[in-house]
Image (cartoon, rainbow over all chains, first blue to last red; front, side, top):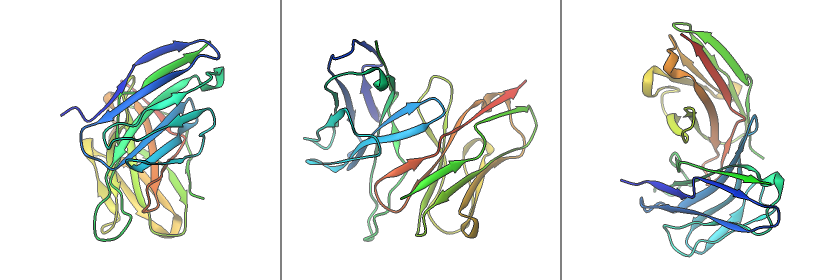
Length: 118
Length: 112
């Protein structure tokens, strides 16, 4: 059972370059998320998606874009890399339970992508 | 807006010492609460969760947490820590919606 898979694991970018962080999950979860983790700052939500074709901004969306064309995939795009985007990026997914409440289960995380912008 | 506060950023304990990590959240409605653990070089894993019912929840590896609604708190405890508990611990809150907000994390170092 693969769970949430992120690629690449490591990447070094030059300022102004662009790249896409890939994320795929095989659990048929409807919710997917991108977080960045900076030392002492915890995890900050960049973007999230509640289902295919639906995305929304999180706490720190500037400089990033996402798309959700399928349930499985949720890529994160950096268009013009900046040193402030040096971070560890985590993709996660979760599913919503029934009974009419917007109840949510725990998130399942990928292994992370360590990105350095120089 | 939701927020989560973890009071201790770094904690150093000796093996067999007791552990309590504080977590407070700000949100007036019904919440789901989580503790995640991140071992060095690894991704986050769920330690325990609270949705409803008994406010004292037990998780993996001997950890437990108590939800005190009147104090907006969800503190994590373990009676006797081991060297292998060295990790970073994150408290998280989900206000029965789809955004889960994390605290800044507490780095625990257990001396052998």
